[in-house]
Length: 114
Length: 110
Image (tube, rainbow over all chains, first blue to last red; front, side):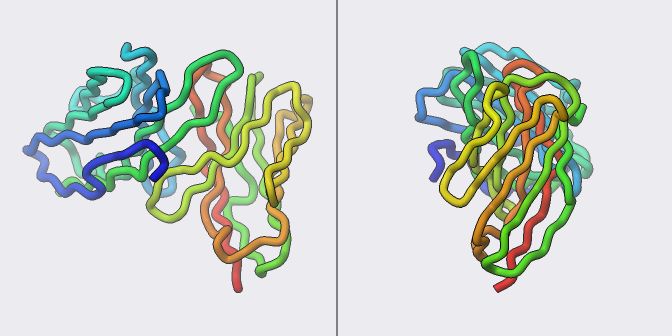
């Protein structure tokens, strides 16, 4: 365990379903991130939360909706997804501050849209 | 936009040999980081090197940074089969957000 826990590990959903991905960290970090990793593509930054406020939304379709109720929890709500949304979704956390710090990643949720 | 680009895309070596991976980036950075990813898992932070540092060591890992050439290298010495993974460089060129390269796939044969 890295200190960042993602659930579920695997998820299969139909295009009309609504599901949520959950991320939890107890490292005392103040920033959390969602990344998407598709086959043979670089990691894509989706959302950034710093001090529980969304500070970045990288032109992500509205069928992805993030939520950060407190500094330890991050959700990604999914609805009416497309097959091309199938990917590994990674959550990460870090201590935001000058100079930068390493990110701690969860193990990811492998999402398959059918 | 992709900031870091790793080279080579794939590398296959024998156990005990050294592995060198390179990363190039385009804009000024505060720091550059290297991560490892085992198949289908999350990324693990290996090492962070700041823009005012030229070299850093951690166990069998050695990272160099040349800001004049906008490049970095990761050297893994005396490789082991367990080092088989994908390795990514990441830069903070966009503020506090890390941007990752496409990665180098390393295979260490026993």
